Length: 275
Image (cartoon, rainbow, N blue to C red; front, side, top):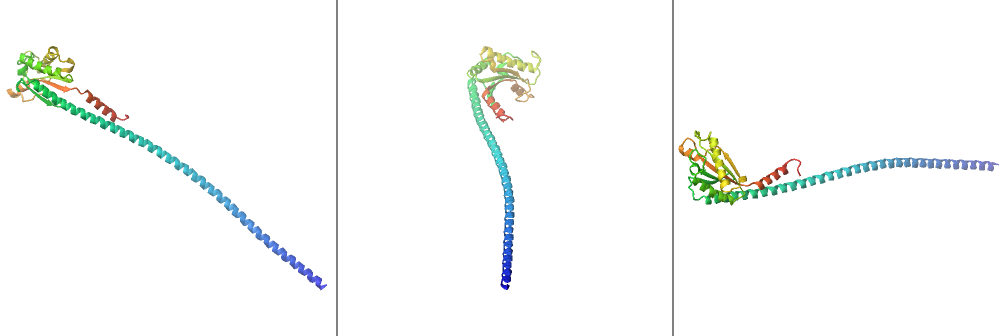
């Protein structure tokens, strides 16, 4: 009987111990499961957070790529404009070089013309006429004593000889423009003409008629003008000075068509809005 009782007690103890061990393992397993679930949740949250960062980075990356593309586009445009400006500068430089060349040719042409006129008029005294250059033009200055009687606009015979020689040289140089300019001293006119203006203009037109009608100089090349006594070369207070002031100047200038064209091109190239 005692043996049976002891056996029952032992069995109860074994059962109780086994139950305690199973409960402990269960709790441990439950804790592990809860821990794993918590870790899984944290990992899921971390994944979501990382995905958000990746999306933000992708957006930033796209924005930066767009900015880079825009910068490259602007650089390309600026580079194109710089190239265009360089081409404009090169074209303008070439025009200036061409202009300089033409001006040099003009200067040489003026000097050659001066020599030609001086050689053609060697038969006249220096106190009757002079040939010189001024402001890029050739001046043939003929004194009153060579061309006209005092106070008259009718050319005398010796003056006609000088004009015939001059006209021949002009006809051999068809690209020369001619201005005939009359000058007087400051002594008022009292007879034939209203005033010194009228006398200076009448003398100029008288010479122009001879050059064009008698000596066949193209009239489209010739201009007549009068300066009265307002452009003296000497004082009007002495007889010698007044004598020098009574003159007719025939002013010769090579045509400037090419030079004017280049100047217009240069002006147009530098105006705003031109390419």
